[in-house]
Length: 234
Image (tube, rainbow, N blue to C red; front, side, top):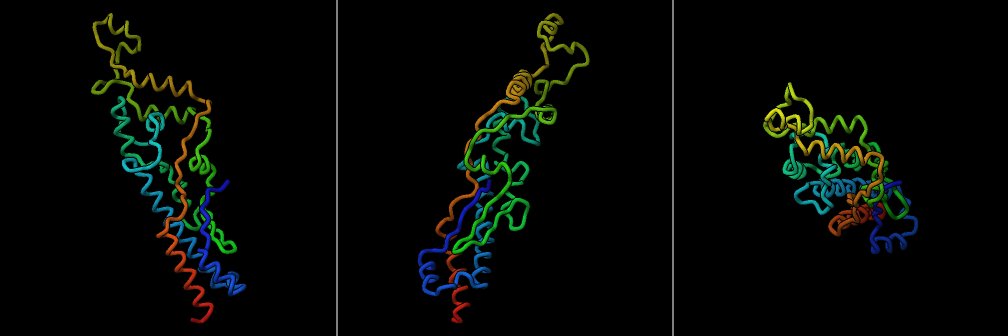
């Protein structure tokens, strides 16, 4: 499956191509369409970069679970830390595979010159699900559990893991006249993730390849018109 945007030559230029017969098959036009593809990918990548900023994104915000399991700090103790981390993250940029695939010749990149059009996009395996939304299987195996351990504090803020009374049972700590240092947030989310493992959930659509904006199309038209002038000798 490919996430794509097709850049079609404007009606005015298409009419001109019709009058000039086989112009669309000329080497100069193929070069121009390749240039359009490169510029269009740059436009899409810039839009992707802007949309991925959490504070201004038009996309559905990342869920609490996604934020908790996202790589990197700071350490999470409670819901307020999840909110703070969410605001600092870039959406759909954890590995940068999809973003990087909008670079010409990069792994997964799509840039095809077609009759009267250019097709651009990405062939990254999970791109369609992110673009359109859809089902996915939640995974909480050893790798994800290890990340959870790194990201979320097992003890309350300001408290260290004790050397004695290591049982998590509140009655043990109460009997000793002490307050348990264990973090309820940690145990709650670990239980949620373990229960979710292997279950299907819905990924919301976050369109990162969009239809060309008018100002983008103007640039593409100028490239076509310049190629036509070169071919016609004007």
